[in-house]
Image (tube, rainbow, N blue to C red; front, side):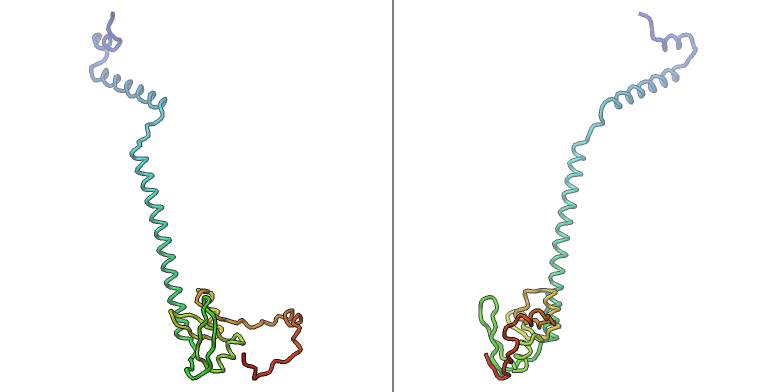
Length: 183
């Protein structure tokens, strides 16, 4: 069999050895590119697994961060509630009237003055829980506390806010309640 075309050109002296090598390399690279275009690119499984693990780790870190932020917000709200109660609580009177109220199916009592009993019944004051003790606070403070944490508010009789429909339906609206009536 005869020699290749490149060998024949080399023997005739039309090309030199470097040109033949260059031509072989370029031809080889063209074949490699054609083959690589036909086959789908190889997927590195290790890189894919590493990418998935990294995504899971980021998601877990995000979840932990959200939980941490929720706990911080809850602590801040608890601190605000505590501060509101401590700064705005009304004074109790140990020699006053025993005012009884229900909290979590148990009856408790506070000794407070008659003026606070009237304020509690009118809705201009309320009873809130501070740890294991109870405090009486003004209505504005109780409303703020209720916005932050409703579980802390034990007793709050909201005053009727000008609702005329409730007054017209009351069958005893025409009867006056005596001032000295004690329940």
